[in-house]
Length: 203
Image (cartoon, rainbow, N blue to C red):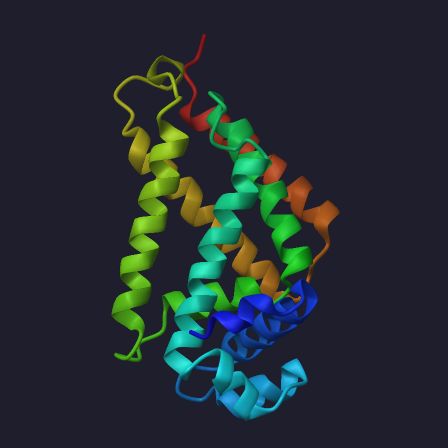
């Protein structure tokens, strides 16, 4: 990657990255030409290759940017410093809504990348995903008091189940194009209440 990319104004960088998220988020890796990304970003194809030497380099940078943006936003919202798992997840949903507002095509890109089968990039994406998930899980679970949950509960599995459900809900909303943030918060609040009834120890 050419370091000159980082000397561009922040708005121009974001325009190029959003173009990448948009094209890769709507097509498979194989069927996402760099020329289309350049057109969406309003730059020439040669200039895009000046910043990113090849399509794989751009794709993996976009993936790393997703992880970086998510962790930075969740940290800023103090999602990792709470002892109440359900409040942490509710806060995390609000943080992800902020990400969607700023990077409208990032969500589609993340899910499509996760299921991408092209051997050129699939192994690297899975390795990066597992690393990021382990980081988020360890940061979230380290402050929890096991005594608040029902006896014998596999807390790590519970977290995975809630994480997968949350991501699945966001994916469904993205596919429908229904970015009604008020409705999303209401739905997720109901889901949190449901999980509390199932997993919290009864007084």
